[in-house]
Image 1 (cartoon, rainbow, N blue to C red):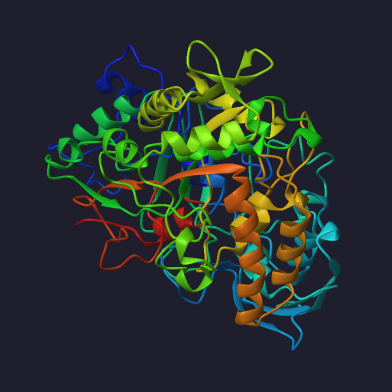
Image 2: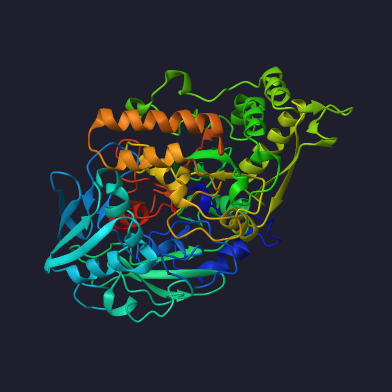
Length: 559
C-alpha cells in the first residue's frame, strides 16, 4: 500500500490543536508534548480521511489500514527494503517440491485467534479455498491440511515466482468467522478476528483505536498497548500535528523535513521504493476512451516530460530515478535486459515528441497543438486534491506537454473519485503510484500491473489484489509472465523479462516519472524500535501493509 493509499487533502479550517483534541480525547502525555506515559495512545496517520467508516475487510478497497498487518497477517513477512529471506509470522517454514508445483508450509504451533479460538492448518486451507482470494483461477489444484500445523498447496504449474503473492500477501482468515460471511464484497468486518498484535477497540468518524491483542503469540505481548489511527483531510494538518508533538507516526511528503524534526521529538527517514507514474487508460479494445489510447501519444508525452525539473520542483530532490522497465535499480540490476532502459529520459525532447506524433499522422493546428481531423489532442489529468507533490508534478507535466504541442488539463479530485476512476477505467490520465516489488525481482509488478489476467473491461471493478488500472493486455507480456512464473532458472526468467521489458518500454501503459520519495516521520523520543537507516528491518511508513504490524509489535515506550 504505497502512494496509492495516501490521503487526499483539503485545507482544514480547524487548527492543529483543535484537531488533536478531537483525535485523542485528551490522552495522557508528557509535559513537553510527547507521549512518554505508556497508557497514552500512539497516534498514527496512515492516510485515512474523515469521516472514517468502520471497514476492516481485507478485500475491501476502503479497508482501514490497521486491518492489514496489525490485525490480519500473512504467513510470512517479506522486507521490501532488502534482498533477504522472509521471516515467519504465523508460518514457520516452507518448501517447494522439485518442479515448484507443491508448497509444503509448516505453521507455528500454539497460535490463537484474537477471540481465543485455536489457529490451525484448516484456517489456512479455508483461506486459500476462499472465493475472494481467487486461487481457483490461479492454478490451485488443492489445499490440504495434513495435520494441525502442516498445509500442502498443490498448483497446476510451478509457482516459484509467485512465492511472495502466495506466502506474503494472502491475508489468513479465521474459518469460524468467514465461513459465515454471505457476501465478502459487502462485509464490513467491524469486529475483525485476526492473529496480529492488535484488536479493534473503537471507531468514530474522527479516528479509530486498536489495543493490544492479549492472545498474541509473542512473549510479552505488544509493549505499546493502544494505537489511535486518526483521520485527516489535509497534509498540512498532519505536518502541524507533527511539529506540535501530537502525532507519533506517519508517512507523507514534507518538502522541508526540518520544520517537524526540530522539536526534538520527531525523526525522519526517506526510503524511495515505489514508482510514481501517469496511469493511462490505454486499451481501447477494453473500453478506454481518449487520445491516450494511441501508443504514439503516450510515447510523445513520455519524451516531452522534464523529469529533472519535476524531481526538483515538485519533489524537492527527494526522489530516485526510475527505469521504464519498472525494475528497482540498483537492487534489481540483474533483471535489466537492456542497459539503455536503465533510466527514463530526464530532459524533455520536444522535437522527438513532434516527430513521433507526425509519424502517426498528427499535425499542428494554428495554436501549436497536435491533432487529427481538425480536433486537437486534449487529455484530462487528475490527481488527488491535497497530494501537493503530485498536484505540483501534474501542473508541470501539463506545462511541459503544452510546450510539445499536447494539450493536458490538470485538475484535482477527491480520493473517492480518484479511486473510482482507476478502479473502473473511466479516466484518461492519472497521477498515481505503483506498488513496488516486495522482493528483489520485478515479477510482482509485471504480473499485478501489466498482465491481462489482472484487468477487466472499462466499467467493471478490478478484482481484489489486482492493479492493472491501465487495462493493458498484451499477449506477449501475458505469455512471458506465465513463463517466468513457471521457472526457478535465473537465465530463463531473464529471457522472459527481456520480452516484457521490450513491450512495456514501447507501449507505456504507465508512463514512468520517478521513484517516489517515501518519507516516514516517527516519535523517536517517546518510542524506540523504529526502523532506521542502520536497521531497516521493515518498510517504515505507517500505511505499509504487513510491515505496519511488524513495526508496531517491535516498538517499546521510552522509559
